[in-house]
Length: 137
Image (cartoon, rainbow, N blue to C red; front, side, top):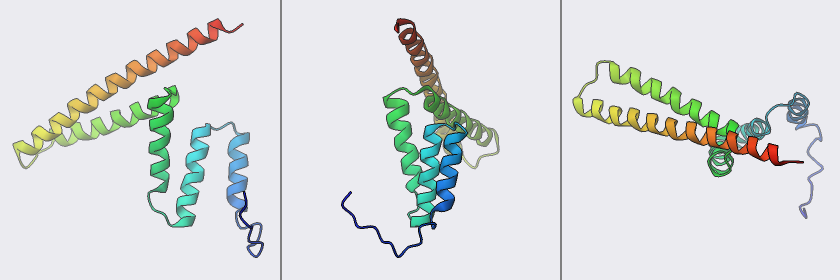
């Protein structure tokens, strides 16, 4: 890095996040959660609203869907299921119009299908990983 470091800023200004980071590493926390934690910190300190969500979405897309990381796929599945439950509650409540009810019904069906896709992906990734482990000497 060729950037000059501003030595006028006290070196301990970021001490809390540095301690949190080391604590998370020592506690064997999930590396993806550590990245998200740092992104949330950066969002707060930079006043760049939405930054942490962008990081989460990219991690989920690249490592979850793209690279098939089971834990991230499971997190996505959990989120889909929770959103599906909320949609179902709204669907079962008194809605103002049949048109709105129909849209929510389509969303429920889409969430159910996505949950099924994720379950298949998770099973496939776990099976592949087990097979890869068996092939190791």
